[in-house]
Length: 43
Image (cartoon, rainbow, N blue to C red; front, side, top):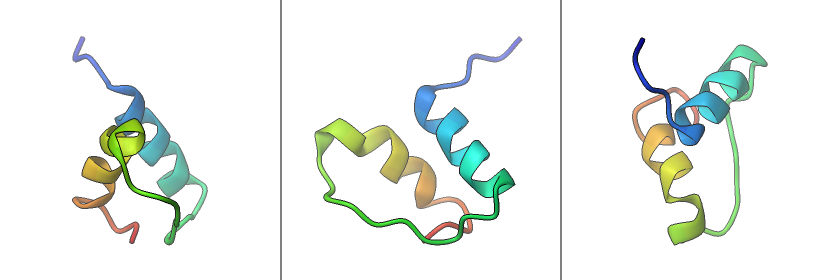
């Protein structure tokens, strides 16, 4: 089974819920999420 990161799991959940836009303060504490957002439909 492939390992899934926390960032991947959260982004997948947001997409499944129909989220298309997020906002926040970028930084190292959310780097896993922002990396995943860059390759999805979420902006």
